[in-house]
Amino acid sequence: MQMLLEGLGLDMEDKHFQKTPERAAKSWSEEICAGLGEKKFRLTTFPTSENYEPSMVVLQHIPVKSVCAHHLLPFIGEATVAYIPNKMLCGISKLSRIVDYFSRRPQVQEELTSDIANFLRENLDPQGVGVIIKATHMCMAMRGVSHDGVMTTSSLKGSFLNESNVRAEFMALANTESLVKL
View (tube, rainbow, N blue to C red):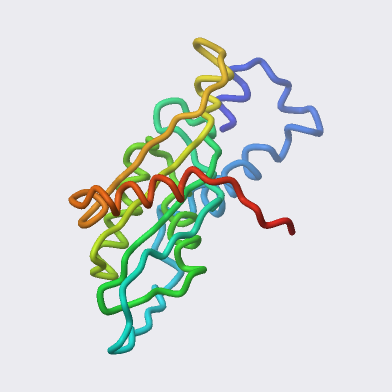
């Protein structure tokens, strides 16, 4: 970080920059890229009852804050995560934790979307999983073409991929605005 600041021609004796390399290194390792470490959560699961009729579980408007692997600039947006339980349900807050965990590392959005879907598939063994992420990339907005835009990626597994009615229901739900006012 010090080399970057010096390369930009900044005065490292300026009181605002004296501790910047240490502060930046700490924020990158402990916060921005915290998802590179070991998972700090356990996927809490609950068995379904014998008479449970599997239906889609959807959590929308999950914040996504990540860093582009190509330029180390942020991309920020929202995820929609859904699954159809087989024999296990997961704690709803865990869907948000999974997105947060995988978001906190340098990567491309396409792989982030897939990583979340694969994690749920491997840990819940659901009938299907669907993940959609919509994000604005600062590497596009602040450099290069300098345009805003929203990139949308999806990863569909199991019944979300193989059954058109399940896919259509998920896509319809994923494209709804929040009616909840907090």
